[in-house]
Image (cartoon, rainbow, N blue to C red; front, side):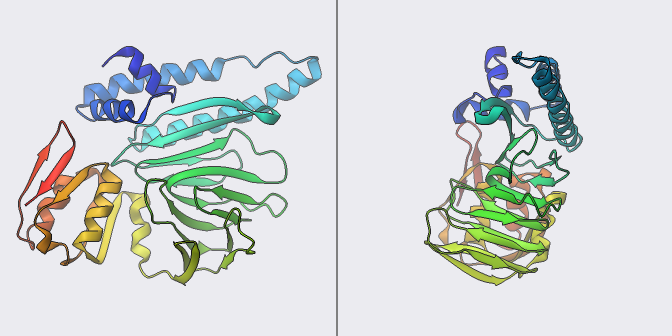
Length: 314
């Protein structure tokens, strides 16, 4: 692997094509994984040791230093959680107004991650998800940005609401447990509430939003929010590395496999698409294992082109 490309990926500056190239290389064998983690550790140590920019007076320097300690603790917690789960990720760091430091964590295809934010909120991230968050929460709100799927167990703070921003809607809470599916590249947008209460806000809309109660969910249909009951609680077992399907059409199942594993699946044998399937799989077993089990009750064959990352079902 080109060292410059690897460092570019670790720093969060790689393009989508470059990300796919690096993550594919990482997953080829354990030796590549060890080399990546070694470089990742060196990069993080360099970030953690970076001295803050000098302020105009010693009082401001002291304040910045204390805030930096909290920020470093949050970064270390995130790194440890991800390493323990065996996932690969990249982080980016940049300055935004009001001198806040933001970071991003990306979870590659077929992986998942768990981290704790500075306020004690726990977050689980599903495959191909990116979470952008500050090192510490200041001001009247605690806001993070999600592209993908995340499960949040939010630390309660009535004076500082927690807001998850996505490309379509925002989710506002005080303290609760909920799941958000909001992949920018996918048309599906859903929020499911397990505990507490949340409010769904549509940016640019004059509507006051939609409030959810436990065991309810909201889906975006066009520009309209639709409320319903949570039908399958097993779905949220993705946090434990399980893919759960319950009486789902093969068509919808394949769409989820494409989303979670980052592969293109071309179906020439369209007769199987209306068939339905129920079962559970370990995410780490990979997409081909799922297809091998699926074809036990569905007559089809498949081929995989590793160079183009395309699976063809015949």
